[in-house]
Image (cartoon, rainbow, N blue to C red; front, side, top):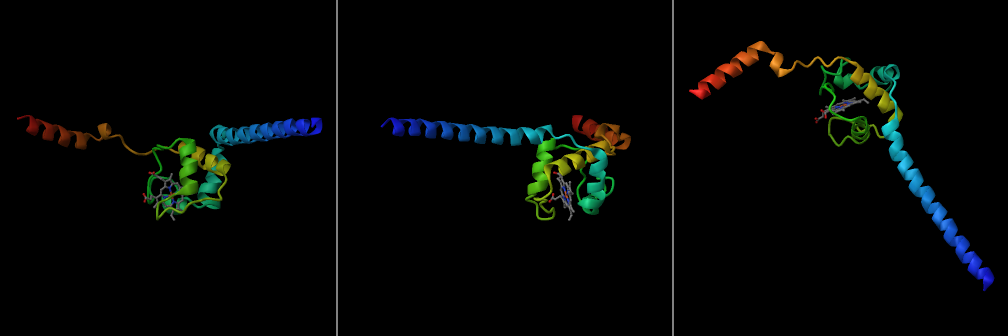
Length: 137
Ligand code: HEC
């Protein structure tokens, strides 16, 4: 009886430890993705060479199929999107490591977003003003 009792508690202890290890591993994996630090120079090599994102997005990340700047994704969102792209024309890079994507993210963000803010297009503003004036009458 004493033997069985101690066996039972050892089993419980083992289970508890296994569970804690599992929980620890899970939260570590999640935390790790958020803490990844991208290296823009490495990211450039992935973008233009290793994973060839440029082929569809342009070397400048804005002249291709879909402009990537200004970047509206968080790093985590970006990694998740590229690894799991549900879009028909964008392949899912499901075996591309999160670190490589953090590097590409850093590279894209290091490029100038050449998008012009609407407020800074004089002719467009003139037209909008005239429209608003006409509506005001
Ligand atoms: C075969 C062409 C192709 C390649 C290669 C490609 N993409 Fe794309 N990507 C697309 C297209 C097309 C879209 C827009 C799809 C849509 O809206 O239906 C897109 C969308 C995206 C978006 C979402 C943009 C948004 O506005 O939400 C991101 C981020 C992105 N790509 C990153 C990458 C990265 C990083 C790589 C390289 C690892 C890459 N893409 C390689 C074609 C490509």
